[in-house]
Length: 558
Image (cartoon, rainbow, N blue to C red; front, side, top):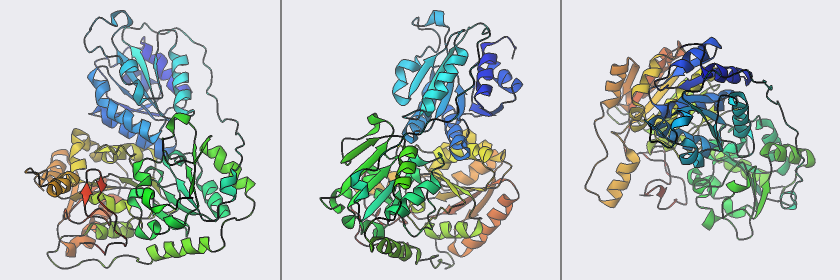
């Protein structure tokens, strides 16, 4: 914890770039902790390196502030690799500080020697090794890389044994950038029945009002990808839910009529385009806007535009002075939205002894919590209900954190702590018992939270998605385990637990749990659910995707 460490210079550089919170787990060298504390930077310690990255993502993605974390060397970095994969997939700017063996020992097989620049470079948008003279310039380069075109994580390696860094000239970070005019493509101008797809690249960059204005000027329908959720107020009449795999039947039914799709900040991965191959009309044009040419996939886009999505949206909404599109298209879209919302709150099952339905759980939670909240999602089989609009609605005063298409188990559960440190709104986490248990010792972080957090754990005994596939394949195993694990983990880590296994008691359980959470603490609401209670379209699985999507929406649930 001495003051003559190179980490003092690292802490100085972080301060220059406005970093106020850092997540991590150090190696044997404790100097980084003292250096950060002396600079007034909040240090949030974790027990698993993956969770340092997850928490940093949650903190930065919801608050808009810098995402920074630190780990040791060797296996510490390989543990963090899953977090880097998620940050890269989300295109979230993040800086990961790591140590390594001294420069003089590189290539000698020293204890825990590992070259992250060579091995993990594909998971990042940059990897930088600093020496005594380049600490501040290396950090400046890392922050620039992480937020430039192709946003994502950057590794900054600080080898052990570096002497205290000499004074470097501190160049203040550049703020803002020059916008570039992006002409409106003729394809977009001529669109008569357009659909706008809002991807994760639109999140966290202040585009909400601009995208709404663009959608209105185009007279378009609008959907979001999973990671793009939270950008659009989902109560707007042009909103038709999530794209592709999670699309409600009413929205999927309109796809054959669409003549132009405008994809903003989305790579159009499989989940976002599921079902398009058979639903889209042969003449449908797809205009895709991404800021990094390497992100375009080999399929779907008929017109690729390499531009910052913010530049494109703001230039197009200005250029399109009058509402375009077919005069009846907006009305058709609004009618589909109204049909979806018209279902309202489902009539809850209140039969004594019945297993609670997931949709009822979501409805009761929605009714109990204020609309100004942050919802955090996992991606297990029963959790999918929260992806299917309008089972869960994200309103204008809310925010949302959803994992990318990589969907690492436990991402949302672990990221919740970072979210609570970056946003004062109440937080609700929606996930399964497999995700909850996967966070392990870092569940103790929930006991340290002093803001309203409701952790909704849908318990089916383990890994529901795998078990459903196992049953479909007829394999002689089981992925389901004890249904007492969540309660036991809560007892072990001193977490406030509220359980419910009876539909007749669901409303009361939700209200009790929220009343305790509202006082400023994290409360785990564990609800027993059925493995067969799945969202429409997921009744028959084939690996990662349904075998088919039914032509009409399923009923109220099981």
